[in-house]
Image (cartoon, rainbow, N blue to C red; front, side, top):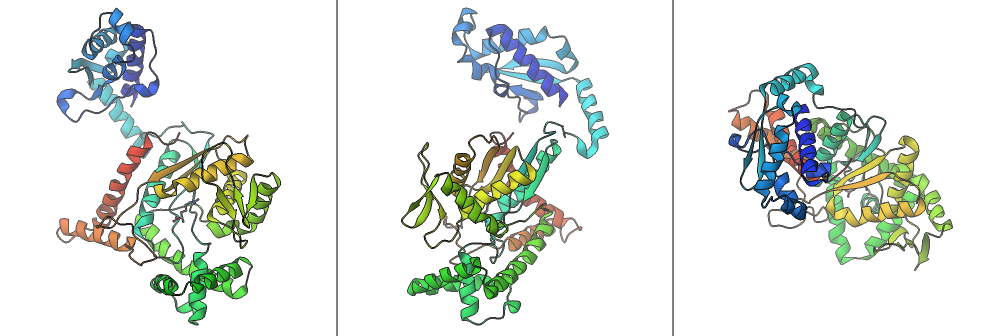
Length: 444
Ligand code: ARG
């Protein structure tokens, strides 16, 4: 809003005139007070800055934040231009400055809203800049659980916001469609001689859980599963065929859910997409002596920071989640030349992303791409435990969405056709309050 910017500028000027120091833009916070009696906007700048400028202020005989606030208001009142926007300014204990907007300013804003319609609030702040956002990323062969809801909703909201601010935005769904868990499924499907065409997502989940129970009694099974993943990596036809079917079954389920949520992701390359690029990446790290052999595995040590070393290749030659993420960055850099790559992924992967970003920097010290891991928290079960796909205690997202719609229907006494929008909207709204909290410190 134009008036808000004007007030901020005038505050900055007034504080500078009084203290001789210009406050940083981020120090001037204008909030909407909860109560009307405190005006349309309110700032606590006199309180937050009083400590910083104590001496100068004391020389000026300003002995409290309240007196500082009064001095600021005195300066503001000399500002003729501000009068077009602000009708009244008041100081309140213990040092707030409250603003009431002028009718003119409000009318101007109203006509701007009418004029711009849905584009109201958009800007060209990001013109010429490109961002890639990595979000949603469920793991193939498992039902879409609530664990991936936050990433999906917050990721899509960030995508929309960046676009609205003029950035070129690219959404990429880094599907978990590769990795040792496929060894488990391949073992189960072949061992039980199942026809992959008859499988569905529930059955896949059941096979996965069953394997984890069986392998606790018989640890040799893990070795069998590992060998099946190796076969998949080596291009075994049967393994590939089953993998492809499993992936298709999962994608159908995800499509249904994305549609329900109104989420559309530009690309869904997934981890498997980078498979052929992995050897090249590993070689580069080896050649530049950034990675070294360690008990048969290939490991990156981080000389400049205290961080757990990262594994680039396991001792059996299999690639890792990290290797695939490094290959993904190379691809995204070549393909889209982004200024920013943001990952909307749970906080439990914090170490992983720190390792990925640091490993990438070791190979490309000159690169100035900004990387951000936007961390959201984990959903816990009512008893406070982590949900575990291994144990099979997952909450299916579809059930949550259905319940939200049902509840909305009840509220509308049988429904007026808006229940879906209200139910899904409520879920999105609650999640995007998190976005509001992380948004401030996050990106730009
Ligand atoms: N599939 C992963 C998981 O569920 C999330 C992937 C996040 N993105 C990434 N580039 N690693 O844990």
